[in-house]
Length: 247
Length: 299
Image (tube, rainbow over all chains, first blue to last red):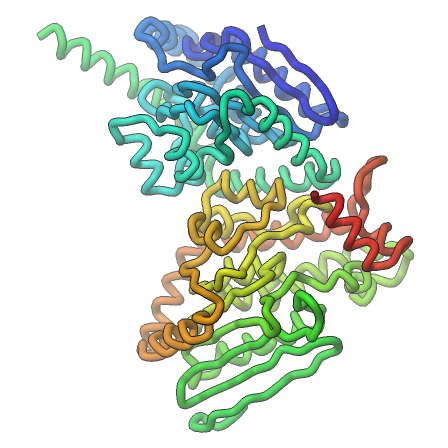
């Protein structure tokens, strides 16, 4: 269930069952993409807040979710690519959205949650939030986006480091813009969205156009194009692991 | 140009305000002082053109190794002079043909003043000498881009960085340098919320190199400039060329071309009911009232 609430130039998109993204649920990715795209098409919307209906934004993937996602990628590679990575897919629709986008994060944020954070313009999080790099689980993860957001050394530290990041580390690295308490989180996200919505509608369009041109020059779209290759690599790595464990 | 061995100073007066050149051939140092004589040190189009011209001259001056840019009166600059916000387009070729300045006039101004080969930001970014910015007080709009384009930025504790104008028209500059310096999401913080960063915040974000007490800035700038003048001319030239090559790989030039085009469009927005229109406010209520209204809108 995805709920969209429009109020005062801001659309709040609330993801129920968001963990379906962790299983690479194609239908769910399309619904979420449509909710974002349809909201962005409205002249009465200047900013979109993305949040989870659950208390925690995106818990780490379970083994069964990983296996389910692997099955989807193996059995429906084109549909998976179209729904998640292609210009028509969820993540590019978010990264290239023509309105300002914000994520509201509490608790653990892993896998698709971390990709949603990377693809949005602004992130407000609770002080108990923890951010796990999505690269080990999601072949559609975009390293270029991570490098632009965190800069090269920090991006590598996030990807290769042993631990996830707490809210303060994520803010220091540039992944998160504001940290607040859980109680104040929803209000802070709406406040930020409404502040962004004070820019004239034409100015919002111009700003996002400029950002889009910049992302294009930096190779964001090309990195998304690599996702099927990364998916194959991930599948082969998991096969190797399975063979190794049976020896 | 003064003789290679002399120490000399010269002032170029252009319209309101000036860009003062202090050239010391023996120390291999030139200082360009932004001085509008008005609160906040706003830069008129004439001052911007003079600054660009001075940079072009110093770029081919073999006696000069280091160029310092600083403001006079406590602020680097609050940005382009709002009093000229519309007139600057009307003064351009084809700008006065109709009541509303033409798109070609807007494009020409964006290119000529800021983003084109002779524009201020190109002149600073591609200057073959070491460029050092002494940032203090308001470093807004033009001040922010000077911080991005200069090689080294030293700031005192009073410095604030940002572009409040973006709140009213959206973002219209180059993003590639800003993102390279501070990261994508932090850059968007400045862009979308027109945040003002203190010197400490700017240091944390990677926008500037050092922060110090106000009374220490002048001496520290002089010290660092003197240190840089010890470097061989050929080494400076070679290092700067390596930087230019890296800028090309980062598509900074593409960003400048886009900035000129989008800047021209952003100067000609249509406003929805209830949105704040600075130019209309300035026409109807006067410049000071418009600036006050813009501040209230941003709060």
